[in-house]
Image 1 (tube, rainbow, N blue to C red):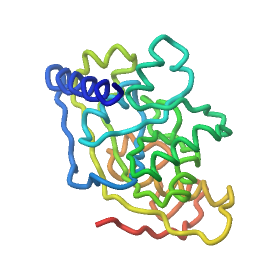
Image 2 (spheres, rainbow, N blue to C red; image 1 turned 60 degrees about the vertical axis):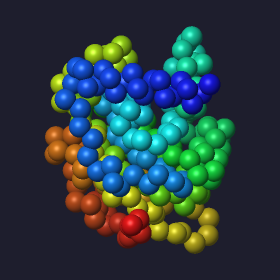
Image 3 (cartoon, helix red, strand yellow; image 1 turned 45 degrees about the vertical axis):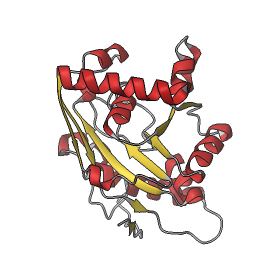
Length: 230
C-alpha cells in the first residue's frame, strides 16, 4: 500500500509539474541507485518533499515536522514515506528511525535548516544530519532547489507554476572522527555539508552560506576533507 501511494503521488506530481511549470532536473547521474544515501536539501516551500519524490528516481523516505501528522492527512504522510520529528533536537525515536532507514540501505531526504526559508535564503542548519551521517557512514548527496519559493501553500502542489529547478551535486562522505563525537564538532560538519548545497545555488539563495567553503559561520577554518563518491 505504501509503495502504491508513493508511486501514484509522484506520477501525479510529475504530471502537474510538466503541465504548469518549467521543471528541470540536473545531475541525475550523481544519484546512487543502491546503498545508504542521505539527501540534504535547502528548503523553500511545502512543495519541496513532493518535488524531490517526483524528481529523483529512487524510493525516498523523509523526516517531517510532527505537526503535520496531527491532521487527517497524517496517514498519507506516513504512507508516502515520512516520519514525524520533534524539532526540539531531543527526538531519539525519530533519530533511530532515520538511522535504520540508512543502515538498511535506504535513501533519506533531510532539510537540515528545519524550516522553510522562501525569502531570506539559507539559514544555519541544525547538526542532526551531520550526526546521522557520522553514525551510518552514509553517502551524502547535496541537492539544491530553486523556484518553489513562490509556492508557499501546500495546495500549490496542484498548480506549481514558473521555473522550478532541482540540481544534484557530487556525492561525498564525511571524514571519520575517532572516539566519541562531541557536539561542538557537529556544527562545523553540518555547515560544511550545507556549503555543498549552497555551491549549487545562485548567490541570492545562499543566505548565511555565502562564505568561502573553507570557513564556518564564525569565520574559523574548517579542517574537513571529503571522500568523493565515484
